[in-house]
Amino acid sequence: MSIEPAAPPFAASRVKSTHRPYGKAASRLLGGSLIGAILFFLLLPTLLVIPISLNDSNYIELPPKGLTLRWYIDFLADPDWRAATIFSLQIALSTTIASTVIGTLAAIGLVRGDLPGKTLLQALSLGPMIVPHVVFGVALYLVFSPLSLTGNFTGFLIAHTVLAVPYVIITVSAALERFDTSLELAALNCGASRSRAFFSIVLPNIAPAVAAASVFAFLASFDEATVAFFISDTGGKTISRKMFEDIDFNLTPVIAAVSTLLVAVSLLLMGAIHLLTRRGED
Image (cartoon, rainbow, N blue to C red):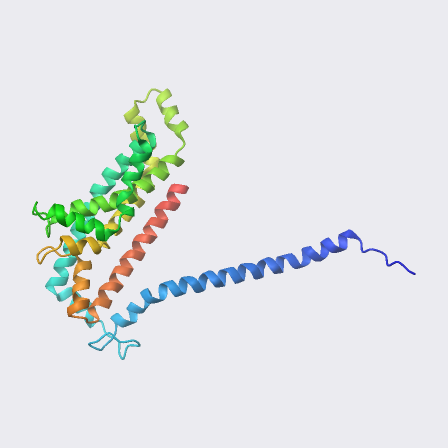
């Protein structure tokens, strides 16, 4: 009986070191392909509105029979669409300013303040994100209707600010949690007052997060549709409410043209958020 000599240990390790990079590369390729397929599946319905908006037909068809920019021109020429767009932009910009100020102050108080019932206050501040918008819209209608706040700028501003403030609180609170407080303590030890240390040290460091939070607030207001159904009327109408009305009673490729423009604006703002976030991390 003969005994085969055992392979030297370094031989097995050499085999592993030869095959491991290929296995790792294959795993990365498989994972990347799977993530790419999922993202493509999620984005496909959004991307389909682009060829539909260029369709030469009077109806929504896919694939398009011909290419035209007629529906974009119709959107810009229609006074109702222009009025709804301007009304939405006015509300979104005002909501951005109001919710950024209120949300930033609330985040500072919740993160740095020694408030009684702090946990309960944090939960209540995020309540508008948790409560279904349908329930919120019904409640607003019951409260706003006797006060004549439906269908006007003030009513929309209050409603959208309540909905946008939680986005600001979450974003700014995260930046305050990451902020190195030793920098502020160093400024205080050098003789700076509390307010000067905040405006000179803290605020510049969290400014990218505040700017990103304001973009989130703008998107939350401009894209809101559910509450608009309850507090709109014939005079005050947002672009989202106008889109749903036209889908019901006047369905044309103008809807696809408006959707394409909204997608483009959303992508631009998401790019701005990404740049602001990277700047804050740097």
